[in-house]
Image 1 (cartoon, rainbow, N blue to C red):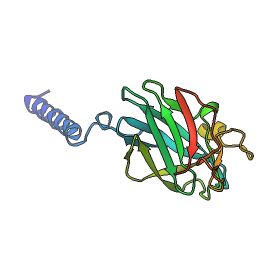
Image 2: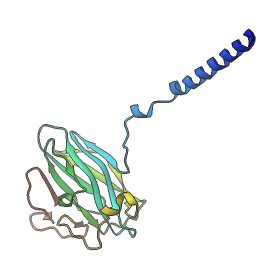
Image 3: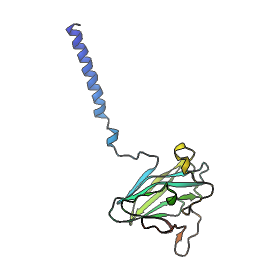
Length: 191
């Protein structure tokens, strides 16, 4: 191999290396960017975070199950309310280091008279200890998808936490409440 050919080969290798390194320089590293790696949304209000919040709906969009998690990073319990358009507010008391997993049976919330088919979004607002987050949009996800098929609400809501926009509040202002639990008490109130 001649010196001229070796020099040309070295130059080509150097140019390709610089070009490839330039791509890394100009493009941000995806793992350094904070994003919601799920189908649901994140709502943050003070020390409270509602994460992976979504509605898993039947194909007709008549009812949906609220999924996600409610947690506080604070040192004391937080009172949290999520209000989804057309529905009664849903409230929780969440203790520090005791997140509420909405995909468990005891924390199940089935919304009826939804009026939104999979693919739609519904406006929602979260409040925690008097602070309110700007309005967000919660996605309505098709329950026939394999990942969500076990979360589709049955035709008849089976949980005491099932709520409807047509429920009538009692004189004390509450609807379909669940039994008290000091750590994580889901309840439904009207404001």
